[in-house]
Image: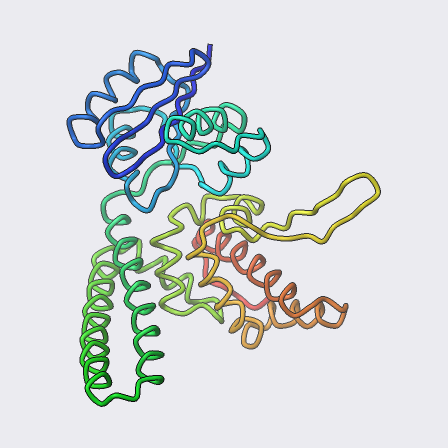
Length: 309
């Protein structure tokens, strides 16, 4: 009998639910607790252990379980929440969330993927930190533009200069990390061979989409939240929409699509055909972003730079 485990992760505890037996328990999310959890899960012989992505709290537990040989997968919280709504499960507590995650794992059986190694995790953390600093810079510059009091302007100016200095340091750390790996240097060059893809886009994809190059077309679109879904019911046909996926990756792909729609001959022609066919501008750009990630996935898979066919 297949056994599925759902784990709701918080800063202080791990709430666990096991299906189909229904066992439920909570354990501390510190090192001792994770070690005890691994031993207890081994006794169940699980087919799949699923945790929600919770802003980094799941990383230690997922890494430890993967290292111990358990079949662990980190699932998308929005997909789990949609699944709970489909079940009519409106109550939300940590034990209930663990039960829903276990049922989600049992119903969907997401593919277990290898966790990023330490170098990829480091690059991912650096890229995430860079994104946070850029967001802080944008916010402080907006405050400076509205400020009237001279002392407030000076305070904002000091903070902006400090953030700019920290941004330069992070960029240097990212450069060092990429240069230290021949594989990363090669992949960065391959990704940047595509017109419209710059250094930041390439490094974000390498850090936050390490599966790129191993996916099929549908997986590449779905994992980035660029796969279209159509709403239908009887004779009613709703508009297609995109949702889910990795938001940070989707954001940089959308920005890259703006550039690619102007400077990449293939994607520019594709974009113009969609506009000529009457597609709304946003729909056309999302289609370009989807085509772009499929193209980038193929380039890393084949290890061949982009060529204008």
